[in-house]
Length: 401
Image (cartoon, rainbow, N blue to C red; front, side):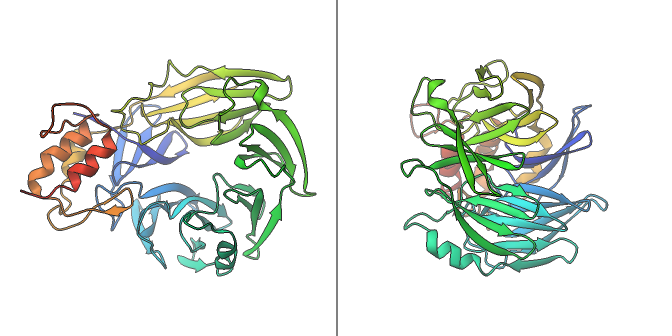
């Protein structure tokens, strides 16, 4: 019996792909040549059924540093010693999306706040957490009432500068990692347009707005120009880009709800769509993925590597063609036995940012059904299928009769 792994984030090291599971707590390694899958262990001090514990990772001096999303601690895996270490967050804020992305600079890793009120960096060599105090001033100025996050994904990096774009505004927060100081800069974009996604393009940054206009921003001299009115190529004017990346002469636009990927060759002015039907299943209610199709893993050598959540596939795209599709990201049967060794009867479980009630041991079989099958049928109603997330939430919050 096997179960798909939701790959939350990963990194390729030589011919191995190291990744964090999103639907359970665990670090895995897959050999991309042989297909062999190894479970390297649970992240320390996190529940075995922890959801989205870590959402990014960086390799520093042969150590993998993991970005805490719902986790209580920064986790580090030493590749030389094959051991975990951890560092408690200075101000753990229970819930999801504390930090989603991180940036490596020299021997430090900067954790980009999403809902967290603290901006921190971790010195890997000294094993020291430093809180960047000036962030609280920036955050208090731009945070909206009822909205905890002020930045959008992703961030752009140029040498020692990190560019973080403000949610709902055409402004960027710039962090100088040499001085750990923050600056604000405005982008000269029409007031009726809002930035949706950004990506690096050489020394420039490409920006796409909710009006489907793509701008090239030279952040060194603050000049910005409209390079593509994307509306002339798409059918729906409501199309929204969530992820954008550039590889070679192509710009790739991804809407997390859409299976196919849009590509614009800005040199030859040619628009095309990559039909992903051969590689990725259609979204259905019983998919274990929470809501979207892809996460961009890496962009290098004119290749884009994506992970497909629904199908558990590692996909490589060159130009407008899929050149590789590696599947087999599965939980082995004996992995579940390791999961249920968590003390369900006394320990709470974090799910979707909420602390749930303790789980009685009599529900272990129902949890096993959820983990290893795409659907779970409620006994109290006429059998019908629902999504993974709803059923695991309902099952885990049940009280023993």
